[in-house]
Amino acid sequence: MSNLIEQIKIQNPDLKISEIEGLLFILRNEPEISNNALIRKSGLPKETLKLFKKSISDYLENSGEDEVTLNKTGKEVLSGIELPPYKWTLYPSDELTLSYNKVLEIRNKYDIVAKREYDQFLATPETTYNKARVAIDKGVVQGKNIAFIGDDDLVSLALASVCSSYKSITVFDIDGDLLSKVETGAKDLNFKNLFTAKYDVRKELNQKYLGRFDTVIFDPPYTKSGVTLFLQRAVELLGKVGGFEGKYIFMYYGNSFKSPEKTLKIQEIVNRFNLVIEDKINKFAQYEGAESVGSSSSLYVLKADKFTHPVDITFDSKNIYTYEKQEDEKFPFVDHVVLKVHDVASDLLISKGRLMGSMEKLCKMHRFKVVSKEISVFAGGGMTATFVLANSNLVVHTWPEFKALHIDLITCSPIFKKEVLRESVCEVFGTDRVEYLYIE
Image (cartoon, rainbow, N blue to C red; front, side, top):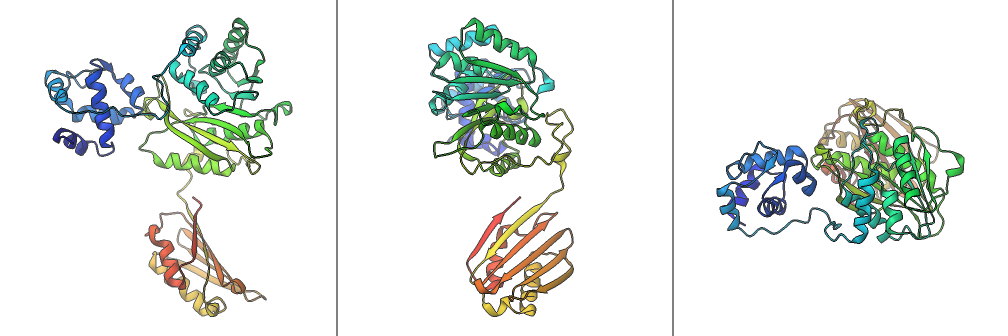
């Protein structure tokens, strides 16, 4: 690794060495590339690339201009460094075929004007092609009924042009102009069994669509409520699943790599539906605009099985778009941890004094301020102890017959030394058999 790469890394701590080399590779091999093109190619957020450009400003013509061009010094320096290309996404877009040319013609002829009120950001034609291609590659097109919840990228037309073996394609969208484009394209290109339905995802689905589909594809608003509601409708469209073949959801979602908590929240939402994340391909899709998330989104291939189910929608489902007020996103901080403790000494589990003493020791170890406490003893010998803590609540229940106890902890502030909480419980109760489940 050259000294230059090391110096750039110091000023860009959030980038991997391989990503820095990949960016320099692009600049060396593409003499004039725009900021937006570099964002789309790398999938990195605008602010991250702004910092990167600042760190190599001595090697650029003018790091503030829209064009990113190496100056004479930059060209000379980089020509002497071995720079391997970086694979920004694991799904290739460089091996485009004649099928892609059909998709490009479709996009050129039937493209819509993106509407901000529907969070529409148009994908590149290459992405439209790849969205169709990946569904085919996953084996969820041939003989299948396919639903799109929104389709501003015209993937429905692309899919029909690339693979005619689908059973049916139905596009649900709130945008009447988009549906007209899809209908016109399907008619002009003589695509069979391609239907449209004007639909607002915030409203209940017509009963005739429930459980009718095998595959659902969508690119939701990038909000917690938007993702939840689109997944809800997708699961309803799939209906009950029997056997092990499963049914599939292809969801495209993007956020800055500097907001990992949003990725974790998406995984949590997916888990609520009992969907399996079969594949996740980072930076799969590239868009015109959306620079704040690197003009890209990741593909989540979600498998529905017999355990998959809809969830109770408890939020205000009217505000799902990014420009709308998202009160649910500002919910107070919560840490919720559940621990199942096994092989606990029997005499501790039937002694009020020892149980309370052990719990008080645990509270001191993690700085839980006890406001009040009480304990109840049940006929079978089990006990439940409740600790009201400052900004939190702690409940423990014992099962002497199983030599086990259950701890449920909810806090409204970060847990002090949370990373060693399991070890603390092991120490306090004299066992190494502790199941730790982090709820949120």
